[in-house]
Length: 270
Image (cartoon, rainbow, N blue to C red):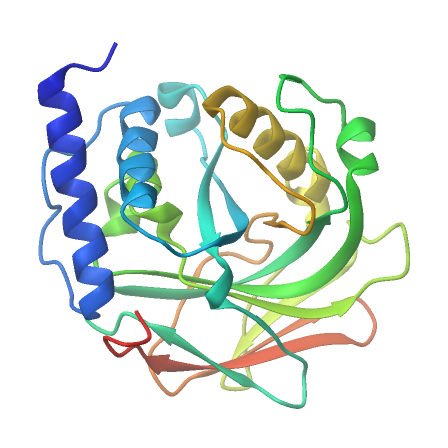
């Protein structure tokens, strides 16, 4: 059970992250004691969500690679995506996406899964088939990973979780009609230069594996998911750092593209 001191520490760290995001200013160091477990990291995330009035429109899922996956007992992590940071995009009109210029900023090509129905809050385990049955649409997209803490990715997955999973937006591209999309080749380019390639088949359980993880995690945390929520399935080509002014384009299979430009966040945007 979390002690009063632990709760107070979580609250202070959460408040520091929320304040830095609102002001669009950087954090030179981690604002508190670095969480040592995923449970303590999610406690900070919960405290930060309680300080925000923004509606949640989806969840990002990220990878935890060995040996840290053995250390933390999980090969994935999650964080909320606020609805006001989710925008529609395509390959022609590159929407502008704000990032924390004094912190960390990256773009990731990802499969985006939309929940067609709210899951049973008491169901704690899912098969790939059961999770797939809850998905009513699959889109191509780009996740904007950004945090006021510049060192967030160097400090480990618990730190990433504690600051909203290092998320600051989602660009939703075209819907995919084909059922077999997970092994399509994917390329992410920055300013016209390929930064990485891959496929969704490299994700554990494929893109639907991310849905399984999120459904089970949210059930365990008693976090309600709803119809229409997006699941960003994890970086397919890697985590590619970006700076203000960059143009990012992700290409999926034959002819599916989505793009955005990167801009420095202002206090109002944050």
